[in-house]
Length: 481
Image (cartoon, rainbow, N blue to C red; front, side, top):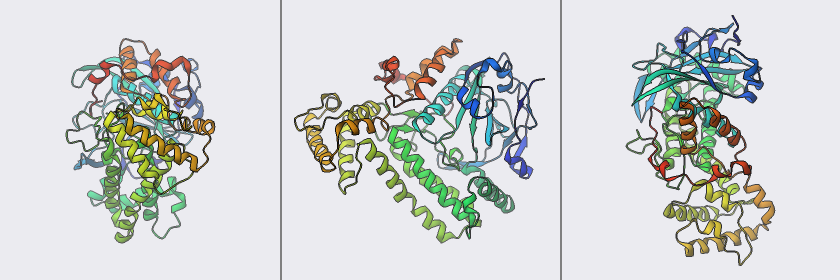
C-alpha cells in the first residue's frame, strides 16, 4: 500500500500525558480540491499532485503515513476571557514531520479531545483557512501553511448542513499558550517542566544557557507576539478569536476561523459574528495579545521569578509600539523618524475612520502620492469625506517628505512593497467557496496564485483589487467558520 513517509513528530519524545495516539476516520469519496506544489517541494513531497495518484486518499487520512503514528495533543485555555478547562486537538491529527515541519490533518475525525464535536471540518472554513494561510505567507506575516485541501460529499452539521473537508496544514510547531496552561492548572509541574525543556531545546536553543530558560523563552515569545500583532494591524487583519489556546508559542498566525481583512476602516470592527462584546475587535487585538501573554506567564510561574516575569510583560507595550511604528513608517514611505510622526498618522486614521475609507485601497493609492506643491492627489483625496481636512494633512505630509528629501519614484516603489494591492477579502473567499461547493476548484487555485504576490500589480487580476460588491455586506463569519 502506498504511503506518505514522515518522521515521527518531536512530541513523540514526551510522555503520553501530552498526547493520545489516534487514527483518522475515513472520508468518503475524497477529492483533492487544492494542492500547494511549491510547499510540497519544500517538504520533499511530490511537487505535482499528478505525480501522487493517492494524494487525495492519503491527505484525507484514509491511508496511513509510514514510520509515524498520528497523535492528537492535549491543551487547555481561556476562551473569550473565561477559563475553559481541557480542550485539545478535537479535530486535528499530527501525522509527523517532513524536513522539520509538523504536518497536521484538520478535520480527519474524532479524537479523545473532540468533546461534543464531530471531529470534522467543513469545506467552507477549510477553503478560507487554506487561502488565508497562503495569503498571509505572501504578505510576509508569520503563519501556519496550507499543503492541501481534500473535499468530500459527506454531510456535516453546523448551523446548516454542509459538506466535509480535510485541510493539511504545516508549521514548525503547533505549540500553543494553552499547552502550558493545561499542566499549570492541573498542578502537574513535572510535565510543565518537561514541556518547557522540550520547547526551549527545539525552538529556542539560544535560551538554554540562561539562568532561567523559561524566563528567556517568555521574553522571546513576548517579542514575537508583539511583532505578529503589529503585522496584523498594518495590513488590517482581524483574527476574530484570539483565545489563549489559539496563540502560537512561535508567534505564528494560527487557527484561521472567523478572520477578516478590513474593508472600510473602523477601529472597532468585529469580524466574528459570535463575538457579541467586541472582545476581539480590530483595535483591541494589541491589548488582547498582552492579556494572553499574561496567561502564558501565569502558566510558567513555577519556573519563573515573579518580578522578572512582570518586568518582561511590561516590555510588551514598548516593543509593540516600536514594531508598529516601524511598519507604519514604511506604509507612509518614511525612512527617518521624527517626534511628530505618530500624530501625523493618528490624524490620518481619524480621517479614514470618519470616512470608512477602504483600508487596502487607501494605502495602495497613497503609495502613488505626488509630493509636488500643487498636486491634489485626487485618487486618494476622494476616499476621504472631509476634503479640506485631507488637504491640511497632505500639506503636512508633503512637508514631512521634503524634510527627508524623499524622491517620489523611489518612495512609490518602496511603499508598494509594504502596502499590498490584494488581500483575501471575504467576498473573494466566498466566491471560491461557492464554486468549490459546486465541484469547481479553479477559483481556489486562481486566488492562491494571486495572493502569492499581493504587492505586484498583476493586471490580469485587476478586478480582484476593487471595492467589495454590495452583497458582501451580508456575509458573516462565526466561530463555526
